[in-house]
Image 1 (cartoon, rainbow, N blue to C red):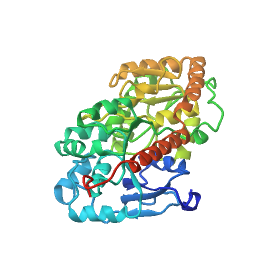
Image 2: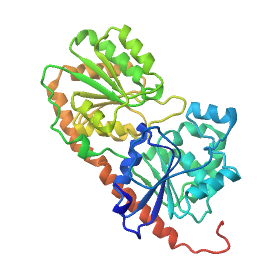
Image 3: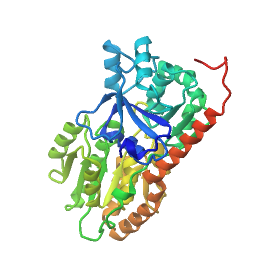
Image 4: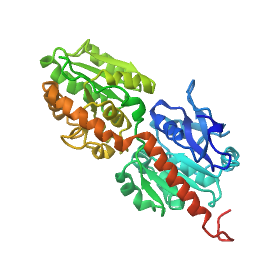
Length: 398
């Protein structure tokens, strides 16, 4: 998609992210591809090295992302947390420079929205798009909570990917306009091929996600190792990168399923789709660790579009994606034995896998990212129209 694909009169929408091009945040770029009545401009404080970004105008905020400087920033970055500190004068000026000439900002994650809201006049429309950690683990930090109380109620629009996030955010003051809208997965890519063949005498389990504790990859490996002795032909594929990559590889090599566990490392969307197309069952064992809650399982939606039966932990937004017995099954988060039992049952029943896989692809249309992007665009346009109709005067913050 290029800038020329948008009409010159379309509202100029800054799409703001702390770091542009992160593989785990591919949904943000998919949304942009569905905008045809908005003129998006990518705005970020940093960019992922060698990231493939849309052919759009790109701007950088010429200042560190709050909290800035010293040990505090390094600790917060290492923990993946944001404190909600308002930008200082130079940081706020850099944000205003990056947003100059735009009509509104779609801010991914609450901490990005806080920084933009603190820097811009209140009359400037800020759309908050909340995803996961920003509506769960970050709520533990007093500064972040204070930022929510100060700015969230003034949002032009609040978008969450799960209803449970609205409940968590309600005590801080919700804006008048809000919508639950999962990011989804591109059916055009993941549902392009035939349904996986489930009666070929093999069973390959697959899981996609960041290799970090809250994604439950260690639990998934443990569940596979429980059933591996009974299923000599079974395989497990872990797709993604992260801090546990080395630990998982070493454990798999020394465990009872050595030689039957493969870690692919990070893959582009087409590579993920190809791996899932060769699998038979999809696993997602997200966990609530340190207050972190899965907002919406994008990879679960991708696997469903491929046509894989889904086994997922009953936590966060994953609960909304599983229709029990129709596209898959839920198990208690942290319960390795329950996950292993479901894996063993599906491994022994190709007909059941095929039925659940058919149901998964049928229900996946609920989360087609192209449809979700058009819905998001409509919500943004409605919010901008409503904001434009508000009276202005001395009472407005300048």
